[in-house]
Image 1 (cartoon, helix red, strand yellow):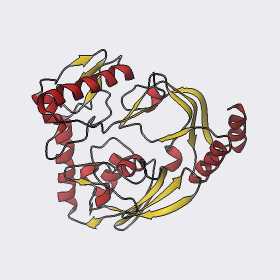
Image 2 (cartoon, helix red, strand yellow):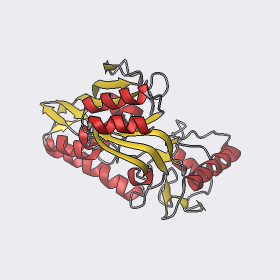
Image 3 (tube, helix red, strand yellow):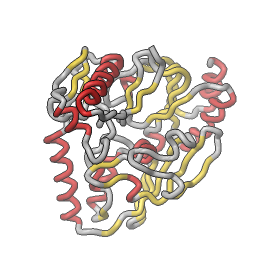
Image 4 (cartoon, one colour):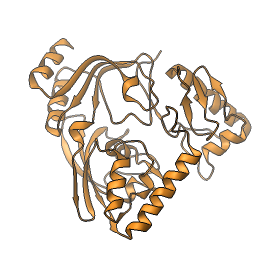
Amino acid sequence: MDKAIQQLTDMQIGKILEHEPLANHTTMKIGGPADLFIEPSSIENIEKAMKVIKDNNLPWRAIGRGSNLLVSDDGIEGVVLKLGKGLDHLEINGTEVKAGAGVSLVSLSVKISKKGYAGLEFASGIPGSVGGAVYMNAGAHDSDMSAILKQVHVLFEDGTLAWLSKEEMEFSYRTSLLQKKKPGIVLEAIFQLEEGNRSEIVERMQNNKNYRKDTQPYNLPCAGSIFRNPLPRHAGRLVEDAGLKGHSIGGAQISPMHGNFIVNTGNGSAADVEALIQHTKDTVYSKYEIELETEVEIIGRKQ
């Protein structure tokens, strides 16, 4: 690891920190340290970092704004690449928009709506980044990233780069090619939007934002939806009907507002959240014989 740190430091690729607590970089405010934390300052520097990582046979993981993640209390072995300020470039060419992986989905949807372009209204309350949203095909309000994606620029784990079409990304409900079939990092994406009525677009966005504010607990640290919806059923309704809203284990609580959210009440640990997830799965299965699958990604060292 020392050799890799020296190489990366000499390259001046961006921010480099040892033993950085990932609680500082997740929306749930939970997570132990990364052995090495890197925030590259450009796409070129991500390529350089990945080459050093591969040459030194280091395990690695990419993150964005840290939503949809639960990081182990024992942290993450190897390198964490954060796609943030160095990848927050944005180009708006009419209805075609090119955004870096580090661009906030909320801020992007606001900028687009003000220009009278439709298609991103569903994302107005999703607290993630472009990279993470494309990676997991994030969605809400009967739409998702696959509905507007045209192309995505990907760095694969073997160091190769490619532009993939929407079809090549093999999108399905909250999944894409990049999660398991062919792991890679989203560097930037091109979206195809449509011209629309600015006031109507802004109104739809505000309605979506108000709905989230009224029904979801973003006033407390959380990771977004914990479970995938076992369609046509909805995870939140199953959890609520099972009498679990408000149930706590340690500092983790199933939100009294929404059954598909687990919040950190102030001193929650990853162990608390995982125990609560398992308890919820067991309870829902015992009542309805439905197996809930997690939407939140659980990563890091196993205890």
